[in-house]
Image 1: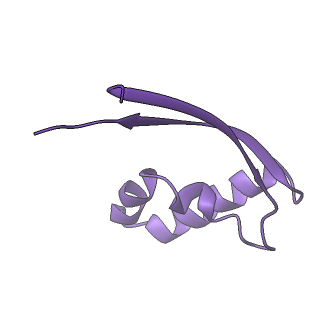
Image 2: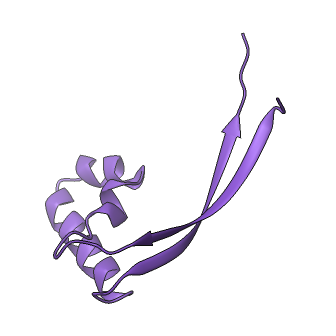
Length: 72
């Protein structure tokens, strides 16, 4: 097995009504937002803005995954 594998795919998703929170909750940025005193307001704003960009319909986005093999 190689030390690194790079995989490409496409995300195709029809979000549930009001279910665009994954734009923030599915990322490492969430921890930084939650540490802020105004975290709930920032979270609501990010979700609202990210939902407005692609609109209410299905979302298709390119994705890349890097898989590394580690040995001790």
